[in-house]
Length: 268
Image (cartoon, rainbow, N blue to C red; front, side):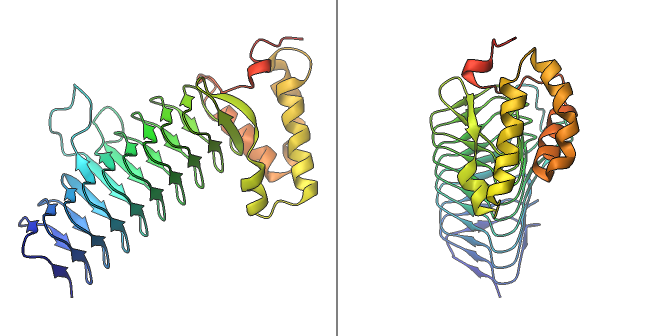
């Protein structure tokens, strides 16, 4: 049985899952689907065509499912989908999608979104991510599983961040970030691999050494980057992580990559 505070406003048409708790001064719109055992603590706004999976906890002043920050949006019936087990802290904002893309913003399961973080319209966010305080995504970003984005960092629209990448605090991301990469600094330079995250995922020393060797060949070998990229294709069979990085780069060759600062202009 759900528990709804008398001071909450639940509009007709909203679907409230079994065991959900909705605290005082929350607003739930008519097209919202709230999964079982979700908890809206207080002063939470869930509007639009928003679906929230089971066992999510949402803290005060979060605003989910609002209109996208896009001047061309004309109140089309676009959506926001949030997976199960997410923790959404104070003043987080997540927008619905736009007709310019697939019309849906998707957030995976078990994410932690700290205070004031923002997921822009049409973003596709994977499972088990962590957004630190005030981490923000522009529209249409694609964020892989297990990505960590540091506090006060900003990701430019359409950017991609590969699985298990780590973004340092106060970092600006304009290009794409390879899987397992560590990017840091105002201009978002690649500083190496997310070795701590890889070790937590049980990478052995041998696997780490293979991926590090590949990283050196790709970003610091002789010749232009395009030539180096061609040469390292044969290493795809050496380790699944190497294959994943190469696949990521090949999926969108029109997007720039975040590169090491001392390799950006390296040609020989």
